Image 1 (tube, helix red, strand yellow):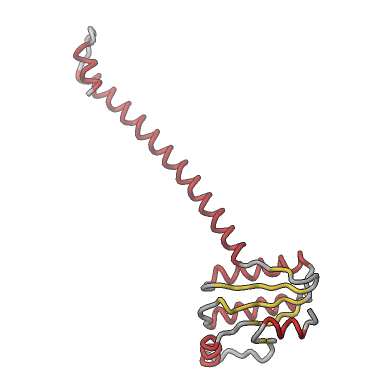
Image 2 (spheres, one colour):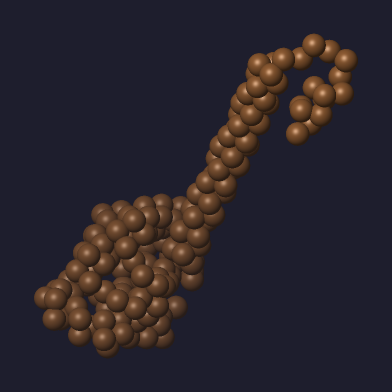
Length: 173
């Protein structure tokens, strides 16, 4: 519209081909600007989402020191393969960093335990044992216990307890 008005009002010899060429250049330039803006916007957005996702993961697996030697890992929500891997890495790193010798893993906030979740928890406990950290599972809900037994999950080598108070008494806290 503005190009057409310019061509009509300007005291120049402007041909239709010139107008089409200008329109092509303007369209190309606007397309380039929009594409570049969109790419940069998406890069920033994805970077922020990634940072927020990492923060949520870190906050969802805190090892809380209860004393100089004892820590608590409260697990809440669903545990999928990716989260289980992060729990493993984060728990080991935090346990070493805090110098704890006993970790209480609270499962009272875990809604469902399937074979994958149980396997991952066993791996965390085994890995902790390798670095000198003993573990106690706490808060296994009745429905989770039933499911674990039905799935044939064996907890015989795992220390379990039904209350934090009992764990504290055993650990002389």
